[in-house]
Length: 163
Image 1: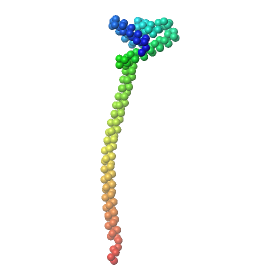
Image 2: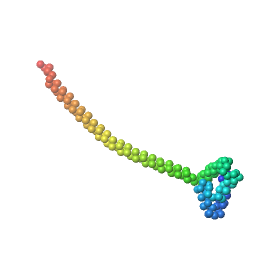
Image 3: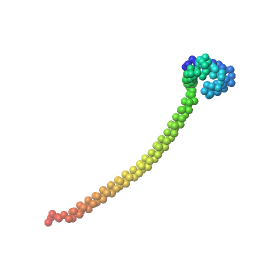
Image 4: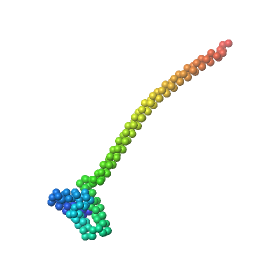
């Protein structure tokens, strides 16, 4: 972690011990994008070396942006030490979770519909196979009867050898 970050929070926590008013000020300062509290903004500029540079210039803006990035990275690292996730990450995970839940729900519906279709088709298949087997048996019986009748008819027409 960056030493300036630790110094900033060390001094801030010492100041917080002085009263609840400063805690509210820190909350406003953090939620306001590190602005809105003159004493904390001054402390931030002092610790990150921004108070020695003229405000508004290109160099100031570059250093300020670099300090902000460093501060925010260190703040996230600090939160992770306490096993806390930043709100943005939490919200992203919540959205991802909701999307996955929706996807699971849709897949479960599809699976249910496919099982129903498969079950319905399965019953029809069993009936169709049974009907086909009965048809084949009937045709086989009819063919055997026809062959038997043809055999009998040919036996009657054949001249007997005894003459």
